[in-house]
Image 1 (spheres, rainbow, N blue to C red):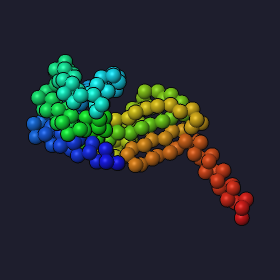
Image 2 (image 1 turned 60 degrees about the vertical axis):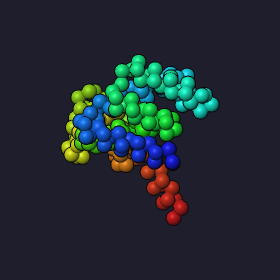
Image 3 (image 1 turned 120 degrees about the horizontal axis):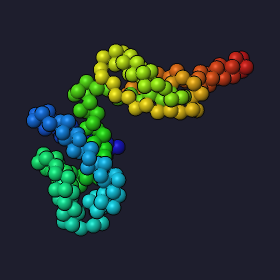
Length: 183
């Protein structure tokens, strides 16, 4: 819980800088690249974030990563600030919040769309357009297939869940029948 508050605070601070200098998207791309690198290279992540290693040595590793990636001055400063304040292990969470904040700034909402079968691209585009119209925002959809739904689809946009799956309908019918048997 504390980690999420820390991540939110650092993400908001970086976004403030990004809005002021108009580089919010650039910082999102840079921070995303660092997070991706660290998640793919677990040894590198340990070399930077594990407090069992010497702080000076860990900072040198971070300096080498920053130099190798050719990050902007602001992103470099941000990463070193996170390191110096002992927050480097929260980079993934910071990136997640930062991504949400930049999406809000660009009037974009993210949606998860799960269908029972693979849908044609045209159908997905129509669904995306309908969601955009309904929300009044541009929709970025993550599409996946889950045969366990039996039929239909489930869409999640933030806290809103639109469940049109056959599985859910069957479960509702089952509960209804069980309630009527108990009467």
